[in-house]
Length: 192
Image (cartoon, rainbow, N blue to C red; front, side, top):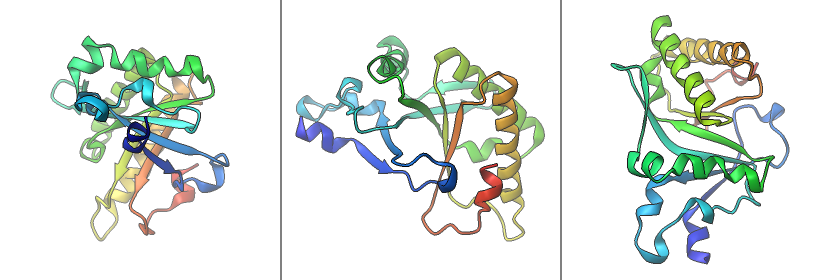
């Protein structure tokens, strides 16, 4: 069991929205590929130490722009073996737990208003269908010197929040993982 616990990445959330984050927030990340490891190195959803996590991020899904659909990273596990359902069932043991889905390569799909709308609609549909509590994105400085991409990031989060509210789920979360020292982000604007 000790080996399994070591496989889980625990992140103490320093987060973008430090002022609005609850004290003691601990984010854990689970990758569905961990269950493929042999023997004692295998790490199942049931092995996640939910008593130590306030939020668990499932790694990951992709967005297929050509079909405007959310794609699982591990269809055999996510669908056939009911990985997503098992993940959502963690709330039965800890109802306060927040379960988020990491969306891969989000920056690629938010450049235009039309792309953002399609992407956000797919996210809202996914969260509604699978009962996740929100989404998580990585943002590693995808902008030019004029800051155009930074403006797009702010628009995306504003539009995403409005879409969550319009869907009747203002409690849904959208978090962003940034590089440490990425000081050119206006955290207050992002966290409105």
